[in-house]
Every structure is written in structure tokens, then in C-alpha cells.
Length: 454
Ligand code: ASP
Image 1: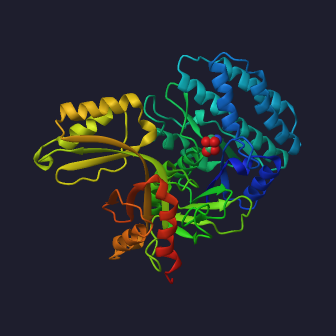
Image 2: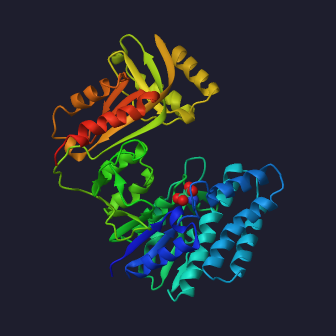
Image 3: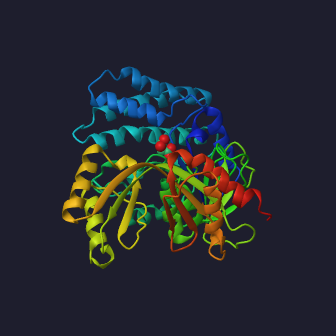
């Protein structure tokens, strides 16, 4: 039997009307047997996501502040949805009870306490949606991540353990529609841990890989993935088909439509992904596939992200010093900092990382250690960089692309601080000062899209 796993994001399940659309989508194809859901998201621009309301609630509980009002705001969000779906109000009493239990939980580990409250949005929404499906004659069953989605222990960031895939595989024999909450799993000891923000995409992908689905449909609120940020570039080209590698490179730097970690589970076994719009389900969306034939333009998309810092280290004869790079990276590892790029010359190396990992204290420690332990001639930490990433499978067989990109960037007056071409040659990364980001994105888009005939 053909099996499709679908995931519906926050805006797709933000209100009763949206959940009715979800039901219609699920009903319209009997292969859609497993449905992963987010917590209710924003109903309009100035609305607040349930996950953010829950974080507020968790913070107040941690500070021993009055929580009743904050708790009621969450319950009311679900109440409005339940009313709109003509569901019995007892479901809201159950949700209120569940939240009250969670806020009473052990607070000795703040991170785990917040995780447990955050996950209540997805967990209760999945129960509510399963109840709604049944109420309209669509046989459905809520399944808890407790039944198999095993994740690692602290302190590492949350990821699914290999046994999760084995545990969840039998879901492929389901008769009813399974409604599965996104965003979290349980450690072997039964402790709840959430993925990163936007992590319901990851849950959907894990399920799709576990049941070896024919397709993973990721329903969101846009028709497709665009070749550049539509808020910066006018009317960018829609991407119809893209490879995992291309998508991974683009979502790394600002393409927030699909969580970059969500590609891993499906990538491993080659389940194609289709990004689709809950508000326009007949639009074909964007397909993410293992391979595609490259025709037309060499560049598939251009993304940009700010918030990078660079650690610059120079030392005469660095190239002859065995272990220099390892010792440098060890200093960062000791501070629990991950890095993004390490462009290097003969006598210098830069390590580029996300600025949100750097504090005044760890910066001071890092600079002192590099200077003293590695005897560097010069060491500097600089902040305020953006990475601009040009991505395309067609770039491999195309000469002169870097020159074209550099020329387009130079016309904006910006200095290129760093260039990095990954060995796969599907991406070319430019590090620039943050203030030039939008101008450069527009210039590169003009160079690779506006003037190219397909
Ligand atoms: N609700 C969570 C968030 O807002 C997870 C998700 O929607 O994917 O980040």
C-alpha cells in the first residue's frame, strides 16, 4: 500500500478553519495515513504562536510567578478551536489539566522543564485533531512519541536514536489515520526533549523514514520554495524541483520554509519531499528529490543569513605546524562552539561561527588561549557578518561562475571578506559585512536569474 506521511505546520493548524482544510487534504488521498502536526501557530501577523505562549508560561513558572492567566490564554486558544470544530468542551478540560500537571513537574533542570511545557502545544493539538477527525467520520488515532520516538540524553542537542526508526516502523500497517505530535521525543529514561524551533518538520521526516513512505508532504503556508527571499527580491522564480543537497545548502542560510535538520532522515533512505500549501493544495509545490537532471540555469537559489562572527588567527609558518588546526578547533570545542567554515591561507586561518554562541566571557577566554597556547602572531574576533550562499547542482560544470558572482558583488561596493566553495561544488559561499546583505542578494539575483534565458 502506498503510504504518504504529511506534516502540517503551525499556520496550517492555527484555527478551526485551517484544521478543516487539513481534514479535507487528508481525506482527499487515502495514502495520507500518518499526519504529524505542529502546535497552533499564528492566525495573523500580530498573533502569538502557542509555543511562544507556552514558553512564557514556563518562564513564569520557573520564576514562581502567578501562572493562572498565562495558562488560561493557552487553554482559550484551544477552546476557540474546539468550538469552531464543534468538539465537546471536555477536551479543553483535559488540556487544562495536562498543563497544570506539567507546570508542577520537577524544575531542577530548567531546560527539560521548559521542553516539557513547550511540547504541550503539539501534544494537545494532536489529540484534538485526532478527536476532530473521528467526529467527522475519519477514523483516526493519536500516537504519542512515547511509543517509539527515542531521543538522546542531554547535554547534546536533541536527535532521534537509530532505534526510533525501528520502533516506529510498524506504524506503516495502520488502518486508521495516525495523528502524531511534532517537535519532541523521549529519552530512554522517559524524559521529554524537544527538537529545535520548527522541529515538527524533523518529526515528520523521522516518521516518513521509519515507515519507508513513498512521499513526505510538508504542508505550510506558501505555494513553494522560492529561489531567493521574496521579502528582498521582487517576484523570485519558484523552485519546482530541488535536490536534498541544494535544499540543505539553502535552508542552512535563511530558507526557513523547511528545517535543515529535517532532511537527514528522509535523505538517508531517499524518500522524496513535497513542500505544499495548505491554503492552496492543488498547487504542485516544490519537490525535494535525491537527484534531478540539470537543465537551464546553473544556479537554483541564493540565500543569505546574518549573525556570523569570525575568529582570525595568523602565525608565520602555520602550514608547517602539525596539529595547529586541531588545537585551534579544540579550544572552540572546549567552549561548546560549533563552526561553519574554516577558510585558510598558508599562514592564517579564519573560523566562522554563529555569533549567538559567543559571549564576552568566552570570547576573552578563546582569544587568550589562542594567543598563549598556540603562540599566534595575531588573533582577532570580528562580528557582524552575513553569509551569502549561491546554490545549484549545475554549478559544478560551469566555469566563470565565481567571477560573475564576485563582479556582481563588487558593484555594490561591498568587500568580500571570505569565499568558500564546498568540495561538492553545489554551493559557493561569500562572507560579507551584514549591512550589504540585501543589496548583494539583489545584485546576485539580477546576475543569475534576471538575465538568464532558460
Ligand atoms: N511549534 C514549534 C515551534 O513553533 C515547532 C514547530 O512548529 O515545528 O517552533
